Image 1: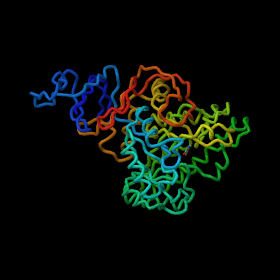
Image 2: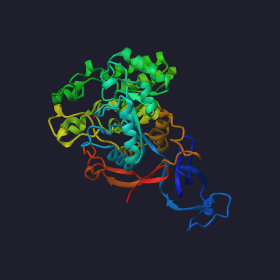
Image 3: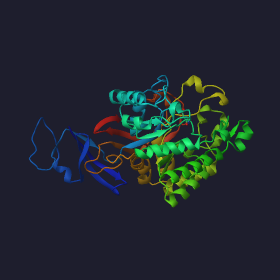
Length: 444
Ligand code: DOR
């Protein structure tokens, strides 16, 4: 099966390409990239007609990408697929459908499932399910500690052998600094990434939103930015000490951005991600007591949001990740204090970033693509992904920058509906997602 993607604006931050090109795909790989015009040599295969050319000359399908942007496939470093255990909220099948629709060709599945992914058999179950039912690649993240209890290290070597590229207790912080140190040392032996959910539970205790004027006015208990910042500082120190690869999840506070920037300048091996919701919403969104404005870390102040924009632009923050966290309607439809933390994000992330950040000129298109694709691939050590070189995996995301659409959660592929963006009008949309050369999502 040969597929030709014809005449799209190809943007590949790795090879510094932004040009109108044709891309030829075969056997799940990119086998040919050429300037438009050279592609006249390609003719659609009419039942086994042999090519007369030494160059690839016959194709089975032509996808006309004129007017569209063709990018390396987007990789979400942070999603909760809920399977095993909470299949009422999401499954690997529905979560990867949501990913494909949102323009993602791969997702990292966080370990806070039930049972927790702290051993080989759960990792194997996830990988097996993903192979049979998943639309996009799934990279399971193993738990850092047994049962994510923060007491005893999980079998990190076993998790690595089973297929985990990273470990994390995401959803919970690792409060014990010595355990975190040992996790970093073990992970380094396998060159695995340690993903840290930075939160000091003593500072955040019982908080439900950002601590500030709004929390005081609303009478809700706040989580100070310091709850994140002190743990960012600790983990940066431990990463420097151990030389481990540390990735900081869902960075939300200005102080964290400053600490990461300083550590990077010193040469510490760290990377960081930010979510679309922390980039575009603030604590003000909580005023309506909408539980879809409740997540962990919480939506912060306008000044924090500004620092996130700066950090994303100057490269302090490497990636945009969704923290897709599906929750059942009945569980979210309660008083703010009692609702679980988290919102879905796979189907809105790209549209939000294109509309708000790229649309306002805060991020160039190429920078946005690097943060959705190139940098996540680098963080996970996936050399064949995140770029469009000949021989790379044919995981591609195709965007229509002019397409206007309204977010309507009722039509989402995700099983859950907990999005604060329902009803938003967006400009820019993933219209085609290809995984190993197969079309897994095509917008009407
Ligand atoms: O808002 C959140 N939801 N933050 C987390 O860290 C965990 C996640 C979840 O699993 O629901």
